[in-house]
Length: 114
Image 1: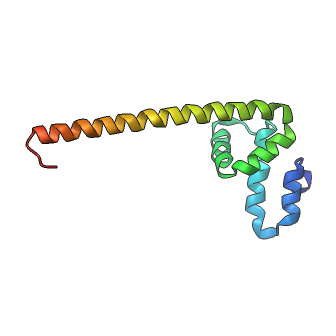
Image 2: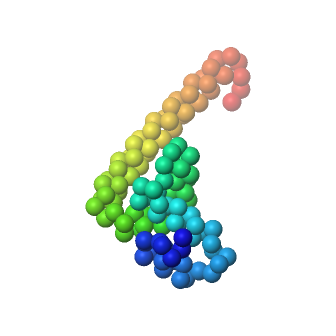
């Protein structure tokens, strides 16, 4: 398992760490397998998605090393997704503020004090 790792990034992490870091290394190996297309199924994809956000820097480093051509596309997609999320969050906050103002007006209209 550990001696068959493809990524130099992970190999270096193994050399830097002791056995107590085994779980961390196992997670990185799982990400390597995911990037390499060796993880299948809904459960595997869910686990990889969770680990991807937990180990963002490591995921990016492994991905860039193993699939440099695909990495550029991945970065573009990540940026588009981040922009989409930013816009959605902005809309949500504006809606929350509007609903708060309307609720406050209705409160006053019903005789409530501010």
